[in-house]
Image (tube, rainbow, N blue to C red; front, side):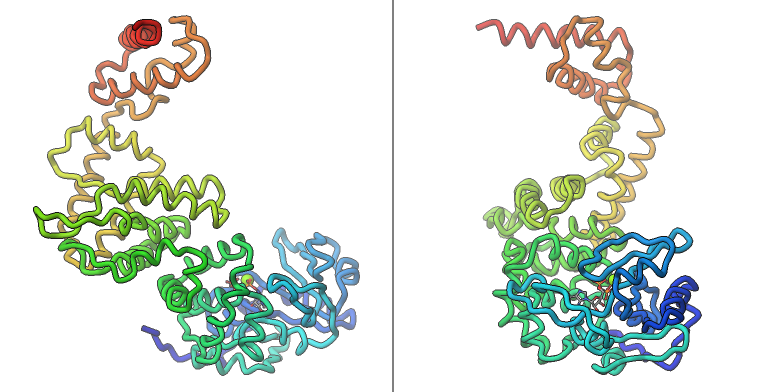
Amino acid sequence: MTQVTHVDLSELDLDRVPEDVRAICQRLKERGHKAYIVGGCVRDLLLGKEAADWDVTTDAKPEQVVKIFPRVIPTGMQHGTVTVLMHGKHYEVTTFRGEGAYSDGRRPDKVEFVSDIVADLARRDFTVNAIALDPNDGHVIDPYDGRKDLERHVIRAVGVPLERFREDGLRVLRAARFSATLEFDLDPETEKAIEPSLDVYKKVSQERVRDEWVKAMKARRPSRAFDLMRTSGILAITCPELLEGVGMEQNKWHGYDVWRHGMECMDGCAGDPVLRIAALLHDVGKPRTRAFSDKTQDWTFYEHERIGAEIADPICQRLRFSNDERARIVHLVRNHLFHYTSEWSDASVRRFIKRIGTESLEDLFALNEADVRAKGRDATPDLGALEGLKAHIARVIAQGAALSTRDLAIGGRDLMSELGLLPGPIIGRTLAALLEEVLADPGKNQRDTLLAMAKKLVENERGEAGGV
Ligand code: ATP
Ligand code: MG
């Protein structure tokens, strides 16, 4: 539910604008230009929130801007953007731009510079993002009543919503994203315009979609964006796999359907956007593995974590997550399910640590905690088990036993020099097999013991390959 906090816009505090930003605007004005801060930073300033980045807009042309400031990066001169460097920080200074035609629904055909700030504000997406402010005298330019919408907590398109959404298909997703990050509702006309714009949304590049997903993850409850994406048809285009869980009843362990559980889990994983994507996708394999057990008279989801990882991987590829991000997400989905009990031996815990990797444990614990809290059932027993596992892991790590091949008393070089092995997959295979032995019995992590074991392993392998 929207948390209604009274927004008193009269308390606008210009001291919260960085000195450098005011200096940039002042310098432009001294040279006879108009200059304002605009967009997200003005919106956040008026809301009393921390602004992400400070964007300056001016009627000075990019060629003029680069002459006015000593240190600049000509970021996107043809789009009107120059990055001004001050005290090691970057500030984007963009020339007022008019409404270019968008024949492809993706980007304007050409950028047209204008001399009027109102024309620049007219091409912006939402009224709350279309306010300009002179950071030196506090003068506000707000031709589309953005401040009123900030007070009402409403996202409303600038101008005719359907036209604006059909110009740039990404805007429908931005509407959903801002509704989550600002915790605002969509104005009814704006919301109505989403569905008839979906054919244009389809053409938007996956990178732009991914950026909005990541930004949505900064919200207190990103589920607000994803619920809107679901009901408006956006998600059916970008990630239909997630819709399979909508309304899908689970079992006695769960109070929510698969979709709602994913939403709660994502909301519960604050902090890192990539971790939140993993939470969003962690049960994506459930719908395709659901089966009714006659024995328990309840639904089961065997291997949903394995199938889920297979589904999550191409989703991450499609959305152009980096290889590292994709690997992290898929690894978490693949391993999110574990049932620790105090009966686990030290060797089982060592195998668990090896499988997860020490560097991923913290992520997995955060995901697990959110997962069990998101079941809509008493989470106390599961949280107790998680604490038990954490404590057991700490004990095992303190014992200093080997947990990865890097910790073994011998390495690939030893295998080559002592056993005459040639570089190749056999080295990795042998080390992995040695690690399994050492995980079971850390006492075996001695150079001579390992070399003797390695010798046997290699002989066996050669025998199998050569024999029969
Ligand atoms: P955040 O604080 O999350 O960065 P923001 O409002 O600054 O939010 P940006 O994506 O950084 O969002 O864009 C900066 C400004 O540029 C917006 O406030 C808006 O005025 C304008 N803008 C950005 N993308 C679009 C778009 N697709 N269509 C129209 N205007 C846009
Ligand atoms: Mg921004």
